[in-house]
Length: 572
Image: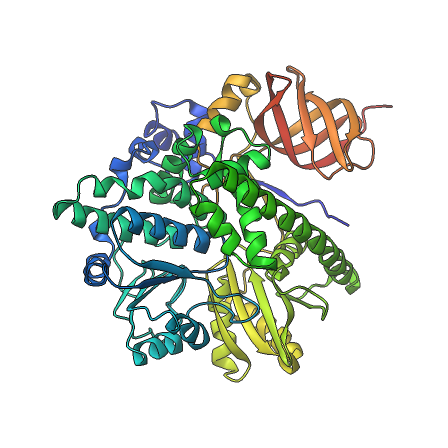
């Protein structure tokens, strides 16, 4: 059963802080200040504000390596998620426009070869006799794979954004903003963001060498950059917000690759009204489903085709795969919830580990995310990878670094984890099946040691009470336009007391409400997805987002309710 989460209101800005954004609506100013914006210039999302391409270390060396192989066979080695798919499609499209003569791609099947540039996938690539391997969204941990490629006479360019391990691969060039000593001002680039910087540097160099229009080529594919950045849930710092907003602008204007258009239209999204959440919750999961269940190649091909009909056909296939993924996830989620809910008095360990032999290894990351939302603490879900081995996917909470946690376990127990890698909020690992119980205890122990003050309350962070005058269509639209919202730049969420005027259940489990602020004001529509249940009367506390609802051509403000909790009953 879902528990009510505490609501914590952000500290209001001081008068002096508000003065720094005094040109803005006061409510918007409060939102931006709470998200670290103190200079109005950081709300200008034109490309002029992007960090200089040359400021990313090793990007110019990458250009020289690529130019040295422009007339030889190059293979791009991608990853089996949206970030990897968009990175692959971006470089393939740019290289084609730049006149590279022989470029192919190869993505490891996660069930046969696992993640990254492994020695096994190098052997597969070697059959095509490439002169250069270019990794996207992987490679910084592929020490053995790069060594195997070099022994076979291939040059290797690694482009990645994952955190490096204790040893770097001996690639010819590594471009990664998270390398030790990097001074690049945005370590939050997704893999597709790193690929964009490499392509942008290459385009500028080719234009200087006489290829007209080359510098503008990568900008044409900022739709791909936006999709991969949002779907990978990297923090939307200022630099990433520019990339995402520029990509969204292209999609809204219809200047997008046919595959993205087809995916969004299949999901019922209207391109002119597109927001970042549509990329994360509509287009992204359809591509990810292919990598989780089958082969990400169908997703890449959807992003590569310029044929509208073919794009729609491929999007339809991805939609069917995504339906299958949802069915598998539903079964696994019910099993996982039953397991954690059965724990005595919900005395969950600091890190919840789950394993069921029948689980699908491509879906355990989603299960870890769902259980984290229920338990409000880091979760690692495992599935059987092969005889004697388990594949785990970790999802963490703010303040607990997933990869660092795994590194601490590995340092304390060198024989326990076969391999691991990832980010602060998500990581992956492989362990021997007979190590599962030991690992479950060890990871909780290390978490308690490293993060003794970790917050497991699951508190909802609110921007406070929304003024009555702001419950309007105009303000709801201004909030939409104030994005892009996302990880690290969260969409505004408000809280307050409301009187319930009407309520009814719609769909399978959604609660439709009409409410007004408890101290008076206009009645406004609200919907609480998957929260149908007891009848609410009198005054309730809502944690909600203000959005625009469009129905039969009419737009109205609507509250999207994150949580509803009864305060007192006014029916007596």
